[in-house]
Length: 80
Image 1 (cartoon, one colour):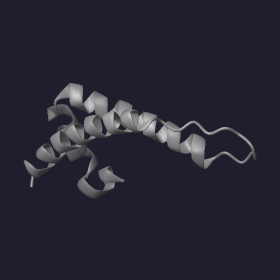
Image 2 (spheres, rainbow, N blue to C red):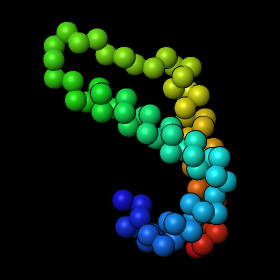
Image 3 (tube, rainbow, N blue to C red):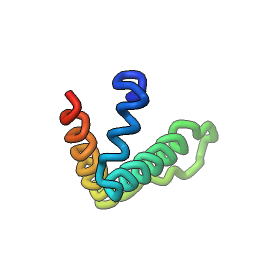
Image 4 (tube, one colour):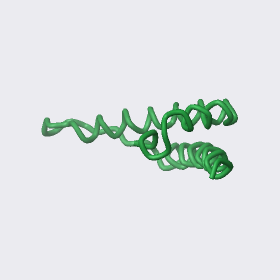
């Protein structure tokens, strides 16, 4: 969705110019959140125990994701 908004070439340039550690952390955390979301959203069996992360884990993910998104935002704003 973001690629269609800013263009694939600009998106590629942003990914290259970002701090690669923060970029990889962002990808990793978003994949983990997506997997958790999909597991909870696509459970059709009654009585299945759902696994939900502890608040401390959720907060840690938020901190990593927020820092990475701020880095991404900095790169986007540098191109505006």
